[in-house]
Amino acid sequence: MRFSILHTVCLSVVSTMLAMTAKPVIAQETFEYKGKVGDTHTYQTTAESKQKQSVAGQEFKTGFSQTAIAVRTYKEADANGNLQLESENKHLTVTGDLGPLGKYKFDSAAEKNESGSTLADQLNPLFERIATAKLTIKHSPLGEITAVEGYAELLADLLKGNPLAAQFAGGGSNEAAKAGMAELYLPFKKEGVKTGDEWETEFKIALPKLGNATGKKTVRFDGDEKLDGKAVKKFTVTMTIDFKLELNQGGAKVSGSIASDSSSGTFYFDPEIGQIVSAETTQTLSGTLTAQVGGANIEIETEQTQTMKIKRLDKLPDPNAAPASKTETKKAKQ
Image (tube, rainbow, N blue to C red; front, side, top):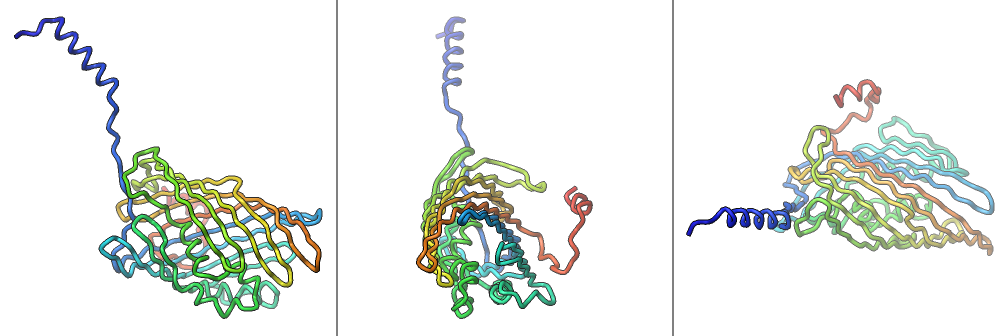
């Protein structure tokens, strides 16, 4: 049987219509963290917090910044891809303007840090230990932090009778360390994802002597990206958190709630090495706290902006080296 011109035209029209209505096949990708025994990765993490509080008509502003450089060494990897690593801090710098409490500065590479002030006496011992801390971290290939060990044991004796240091240490529990480490990882999906897909993970955090928090992290896969000439995968992250505070400090009891107002973050993941190579997040929170002091209740309106930056480094930098000038930094990038 021979097709006529009319048959050919009709077949062409039908084929075109089917092609127009067919859904394109979009490739899906899966992502996992990788680590072989002996692998090492060096990271620089900077966390900053700016806070404004209104107390009885008076306004107080405080700021705090902490930069840590740590080497993560993989110790174990089981058949299911679950990983165990040791994270060892190599350098720590801290600066703070804590309003009525004064200013504070600490550098683990300095020959001598300031002493004699209330802040130095209470915080120096804390940061001296954190500066060389070795923690055991366990996580799944999908980025779930299953355990952090060694933080509570490191600080237990030091935090007794030192409520200010306990506050800066997040209560000093392994659960607090686990919550902090979770901020450095993306939670991946077991199923494949395509560009534009979003997923959510919920979390609960219990911080002894401080309170508890509940929240949700939303991740969106944004596809391929180039970072410093390297092919990476880009992810956008937002987070909501509601923190219920229950704090006893120096004869005063502080309680209340602080919750997220806004949140944004960008993570870059290198699938070849199975690691985050760069990230930056910003979050604003606000709430009302009540301080019970000497039988009186004092309301505190608080606003906070928290930022975090993570960068995987090619090598461990010299903490005593002079900082590069803007011109040198620009040339290095070129």
